[in-house]
View 1 (tube, one colour):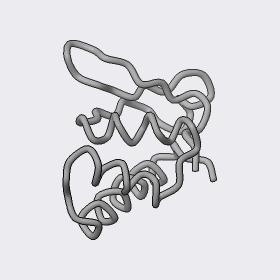
View 2: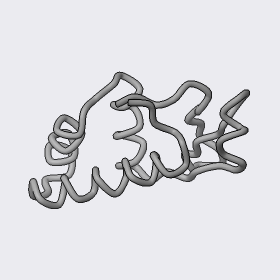
View 3: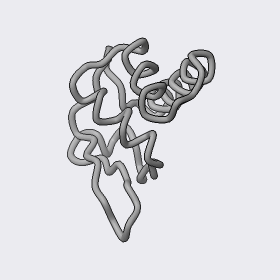
Length: 88
């Protein structure tokens, strides 16, 4: 999986937000605010990470269970899919 072209992560007033630019603004009219784990996962998705490697990074970074990491990654990816940020 990979982040679709035209979605840019920026830091604005201490918050991390995803902003659509160009044609991506036709898919998403607004911005997405990400927490620290969202920023971590977003960066990995820019390089085409799969679900398993995303979960492994959450486990490494936050010392959470495999089940929790898998659930968190699933929710995050589902949210990105719904708003059109992912390409497979």
